[in-house]
Image (cartoon, rainbow over all chains, first blue to last red; front, side, top):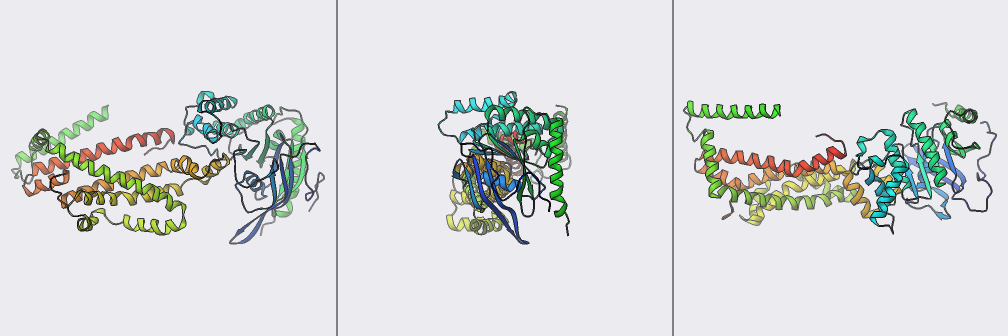
Length: 277
Length: 254
């Protein structure tokens, strides 16, 4: 196997050395799925630190464990070994301080648009109903859907649905926003609009965002750091810093150069493991 | 509008044809009462209050038994969807009992409760509960796991998760199930009323039964029509709003 130039795997991949403790800290996190065909190591010895406000993309081929890692941080995946902390607290169950967006919008069809955004706020204590509605409306405004608050979910386009899902995920003011290929099923034009929106929201709120994608170009367009995963067993193979000014355009020349570099590393990962029986 | 007119015309023709056959064929009115006689009976019995009180009696039994059936079926369905043991016991029992036509409960209901209101309620309850239970269980199993996970990441759990996510998410199935339960309840009540005579409180089924005993076919046919009408109206009134809601929100068509 070729060793990528950027960084090794087993040492913690740390963010810039700052005095503040990292937002997310993973120490030798491993996850094994036991199935009828035997055990599958989805993640092996993952070490990762993510700083507050950092935007990190997980990139890698299918089955490399990048979504599993996201789900571990969300608290949806149990039975992993190692330590996973957010703000110094071990992750045990899901909670609204780590909201998540999925590839399928996962909006609730029995609620209207406003009702969906209110759902995540309804569980937040210490708010009056009036305040909740105000917060929900302001988040719909943030994603440009304030005129659609009474609409049913099935009436929206794919891009609008993901916008509502974004508003819903942001409304309870989470510390960490987890995004699992949220734009993968959208068309290219809609996707590029959402890249713009997401960057704008990220710089306005400085949320810590973990973003899983297959799309290297997308990762470079959005992230401060891109982590490249390799499959069987899933591990972080290399890390790439993206030091480009924001807002970035999907088709920036600089982004294209870095994408090419990451894609080359991606292909090196795929080459030895893609010899299927 | 045009369709409505066409349908009205068709029904008018049907009734006219029926009147003509009844008059011209010379078949005894005991076998084939003409619609005019049926209408006459309806007018008389509505005026005398017989039909109204029978309808109220029937609807009271139906609603009490049905509501009890839904109230029992929903939580049992939730239990059966949630716990393996409940599924193996209650779920299997429901599956078995649902195949039993609810009129088969009539003999045992009479033995247990005698010729009383309770026997009626029991039969309606038995017709409702299993269908509702199975539909609820099925509905909950059909929920995309994603809804649950999305709700969990927003901090929902326990009772909140069940009441605000899993129950509404299975609404399309629950509506179908309660509607089916309604159909079963209605059919079983009619059968029960024909078989079981509760002294002093006649339902529509009793009037139908007496019509046969008195050879009053106009009464029988009139009651059949009336029963159709009630079933139709109840279906529209009870389930219409839910189905419209599902259509509007979910984008589902029936």
